[in-house]
Amino acid sequence: MRILQVGPIPPEIGGKTVGGVATHVWDLSRHLAKRGHEVAILADNFLGSIEMPAIKEGVKIYEFSKALVLKHLPSILLNTITIYKLKKHFGDLIGITGVIANFFYYKYVLHHFNPDVIHVHHLESRFPFAYHVTNGCVPIVVTVHSFSSIKVSTSEQNQRYYKLIAKNLKLSQNLIFVSNSLKAECKQLFGGLKARAWIVNNPIDTAKYYLIDKNKARRRIGLSDETPILLFVGKLNKAKGIYTLLEAVKLLKEKEKKLKLIIVGDGPERKGVQDFVLKNMLQSMIRLEGRKEPFELLYYYNAADLFVMPSFSESFGLVYIEAMLCGVPIIGTSDTAAPEIVPSGDYGFLVPSGDAGSLALTIQKALSSDWNRYNIAAYAKSLAWHNNIYKFEEVYKEMLSNA
Image (cartoon, rainbow, N blue to C red; front, side, top):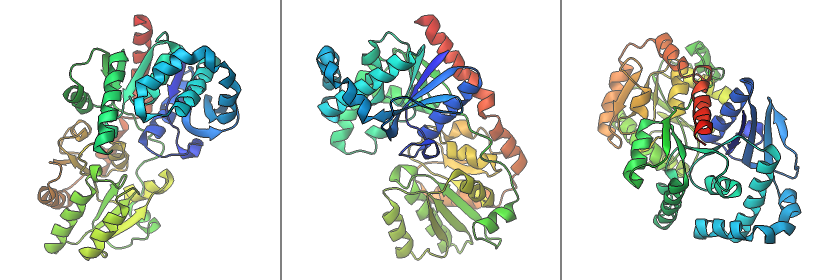
């Protein structure tokens, strides 16, 4: 099967941005290639000047090339109608120059690779180009990873993105949701779904994260005492519940509880987090580590006694599973996708989002509980790629049979 993935790629493969979706696109592509499929990625965060694709681990990666776009500009008059449709579809979200550049980029890649199926990641800006360039003649499935674009932007942008997603949902025939809670959220936001829909949880790369000696891991990150360690890994924004966690640590300090919180990640709230720590004199309890590479994260996960991310919105949350692969129990929020990841109290606890008091009590309970690191890691391994890649193949086959 010839499968084209449309989405970002991680920095270690050449991408210019970071994020869980980029990691997912790359892992999905290379595992499909290992299964014998012909796979390519239309990587819109891979910028360069070469027309022919790079090939890594059997996967073709097409970069966004200005030279490629300029080469095809003379044919703009032949494509006026489609370009007009795309500009009208996007409205003010993308200027005419961006529409034209992306149109020719998508057109070149689709013509050059000639896929049997197209797998687009995110419902916003990528899907319309794939749909209009192919005139809907190639089966397209869209993975809905989140609805963050209508949650974290300004109210005016929210309205624009909401309308764009609503338009795309009307055109979409096949959707993958990464969790049941995200599918429910989609219905709540946009009403009933006409498209075929599947629930496929994001698998995990078990080669990156695994159990190692806790003392060795602590020494590696500069900790040598027996103080209980809480770990947060994620983007520093309000949606991740970072301030709820800080408030909980503040409450625990007032109760004279001994612990240390390590925060790994960066984002728009970094200064706000720093200010909170200073204002509440939590410097001795909290370390801000910034962004870390996967090989470094291995040691942070294994050093931790408890992973805590009290998100307000989490479509799936691969970091929960990464922590569990290292035998670490987790605390997530009950009104996100976390309940699907934590099926029982053997692996962690759930708390209401935004409730610092409940979170503080649950942290105390978790730190005083006996956890079986090996059982936690074994459960997380069941979510590995090699156990779940067939689910994507089944989606593609069903799409082709219904095309």
